[in-house]
Length: 218
Image 1 (spheres, helix red, strand yellow):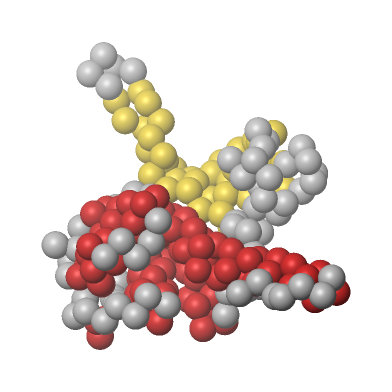
Image 2 (spheres, one colour):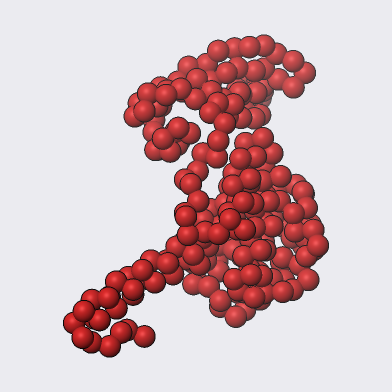
């Protein structure tokens, strides 16, 4: 797991404190301490005991929610990403643990904004916009496969997301909201970060060429 404080993959020390049972199940607080930064994180866990055919009981986790620290649990948005694109991503990260459906709605809206603004795609719904990106190979193969997975995992055929409601809250599959955020991070890197790195390197090279009395790189 990743420490919510320092964002480093860890094998934390942990303990659990039972806090009661209600009609939804049994509850406990799981306290984990990162061996790197020595900070505690607190998770609210709901579980139930299910009896196997052999008569033995098995503990099945129903939900796990990070309650402290409250944050995105993801790396900060690169400075090269304009606020118009980063704001929905950041909000999607913040609500992920509380509502994966709301998180997925925000990340889908962010994706549609990117496709329309950066790739100039304007179809009637997000599924068709993704398909146009794929048909025209407007992104590298790994990114095409990744955004296509957003459409497939999200089952857009069952929940068509129209252009006027790309932020619609619909049911999500396990892991869908996290995958959306992963794909957005890849798009941020390809469309914003890497071009800026190339631009800065080109400017530095041209400065050297100019000092040497040679023509600039076009």
